[in-house]
Length: 186
Image 1 (spheres, helix red, strand yellow):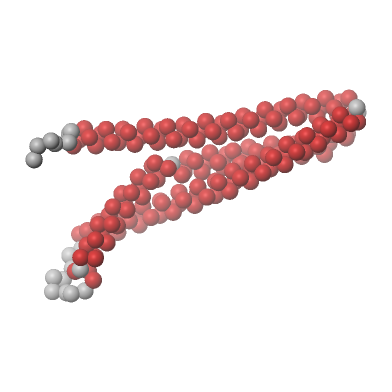
Image 2 (cartoon, helix red, strand yellow):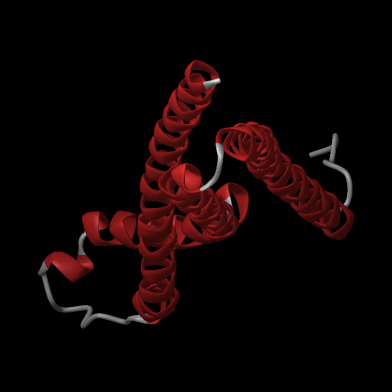
């Protein structure tokens, strides 16, 4: 019986290590996604204010500086284009939703790891038969909980992508409806 208990403890410990590695991976992913989300939001906010100001700016026509050059006009066009693109990138990549999904999965896995750690620490408080039964049950529960967390993560990620695709297609359809079909005549 002691050998079986040791095998179960070893299996739980290995599973705990795998869960720990996965939790760290999801935490790192969440930080990365959060950083991109905040960066795109900041860029969008700055450009939303700067682009209209630059477009409506009227330099002194007698001036020969940079603001009257073609380079300035091209720069303004690029900034306005990037302003719209940054908002589109936010919607398409949905870093905010994906951040939340990664963070939630990381927290779930860390909680699961703590439960396993606790179970391993208290496993010797019971007689051999009860210890064996508790460890075996915990191993099954942890494996199921881990799979459920990972499955939920994948499902949420897929739902985010599908909802983003649907929003993009709807926006394109509305744009086409507003502009009408492309003209074939000149």
